[in-house]
Length: 330
View 1 (cartoon, rainbow, N blue to C red):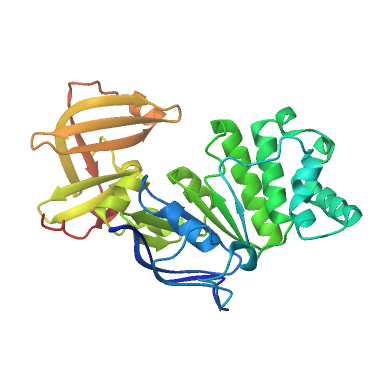
View 2 (tube, one colour):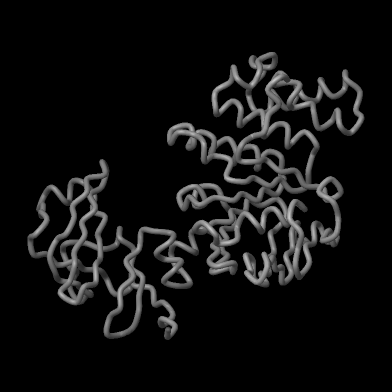
């Protein structure tokens, strides 16, 4: 089956600066794709180019095999959900959802009936007559999501849709987004700077750095086998160490304070101990300046605790070390 979205050497320049630098990517039909990376990496520019809200300097964008590079946003078969939600304050939740159909000339009775269906889809039937100011942040997000979905797009584009929500609600809405994507079978492309969010949601995670794709793969593959030191550090949960045998990434949850027989080790002094509930994070700095950390189950740490300033040795099984490319000379 042909991918829903194909980017072919897509570039976006602002003056002489390349915000997106000749990236190529295929996003399979019916998948949940997250674009992630630090601020300024090009992820939002990429999303806006797919939507047609940003012109393309070079390259092509294909949606379901059709070249849409020069098409207006309304002609592409996509819908975009903005970070701010952009709800009309004078319209009810039901009217906000129906607005896109109104702009397409759909009769009032039909558009309100369809809007009611999408209110049920996002589980807000009881809120139909409320204005945006009478809705919580999570409810406003659901209204914005329903408004984007009602036009039945082939691809739904989401620009950091969870960033304004508190942590508890963010987790709930992640579950809702994944549920809707699976039920509807629509391709979702979701921009986020949150590693946990991308890991939880995506079938395909695309890590970007300085306008280029650093790695694109299922999230478990990225976590198990990061393609570079940048990816390992950005995704988190890894130590990146220069050892005699080369540069390696070692997961912090596979690093211990009890070096296994025949395993590798790093000795130094404890610089931080951080209690995280189910786990305790212990950071050790070696004499050569390198730091590494272990994420230890709470009960194991408290069976033999250490404190900042104490000598300690971190260890790991050599099979747990993933070799990284050698650093590029400056």
